[in-house]
Length: 114
Length: 107
Image (cartoon, rainbow over all chains, first blue to last red):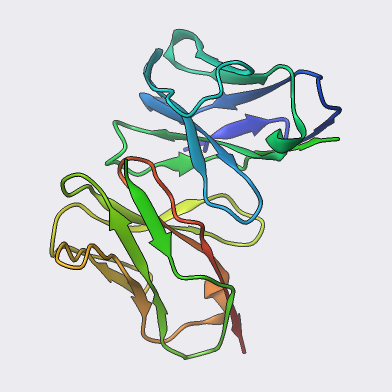
């Protein structure tokens, strides 16, 4: 089966610009996650969707980050405006059910904010 | 909320050495626990998991036992190979990950 797809793989922007990341989960997976992974740290959950509803967005900086999952399939994560500290790898993952099930991770998008 | 503490790295071992990567957690109740691995140039993937106390997860020669008394989930392998070189992450079902530990195995 096809894995989790993410695009772009790399993005360089200037601070105060906006950027969007796209994720296509494994077909049939109800749960989708976005993580931020800063260099040298573990992934930090930003938002969790169950189908097209938000389960947990408690760590999402809502003043600048937004995410949506249209029709319970693809998802986009947006940052506007970007700050230097947003430089990180943004990971998308999906699982067939909730977090007690195995998560399948995409390759990530490496964002550099200059 | 949950938290995970992993031993600091990086760690370099010789092939066939014994490996232990410590992981302790704080959590409400007894969440499922996971070890994820990230090989060079690849995405994170599940290595093993345990869903309740005293469960032992195992895969690819790695093992980890869920110890509720010590709130630990240490990862072990009796004889590492060069192909085990990777970054290892401990995590809880609340989607809290440790910082990761980079392992390099030399021939």
